[in-house]
Image 1 (cartoon, rainbow, N blue to C red):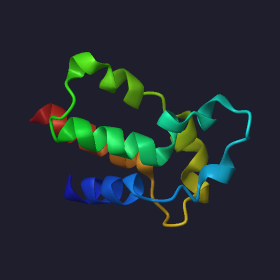
Image 2 (tube, rainbow, N blue to C red):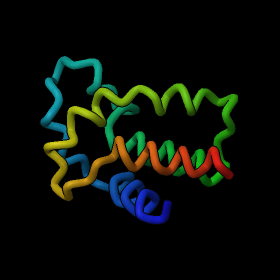
Image 3 (cartoon, one colour):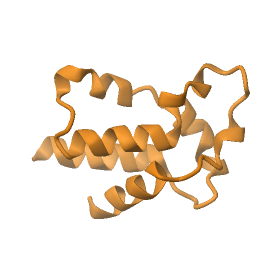
Length: 93
């Protein structure tokens, strides 16, 4: 899981160079659904700063912007896969 966490940490503090991959009027332009926001949200959950009752798991399932930006990431990150790997590892304990 360390590779997935490192990817999420890097993305969480990225200046969103992938943002132009979403149409300006697209629902995925909601700030909380950008790859960097999703990465930060996942890290907060994995660090036990957010509980499951907070709705974080449901929020982390909304990945339209994450999927759209995969080919536009300056660093070549696959945030969708990193989120899957990190959350699966957390579920296993």
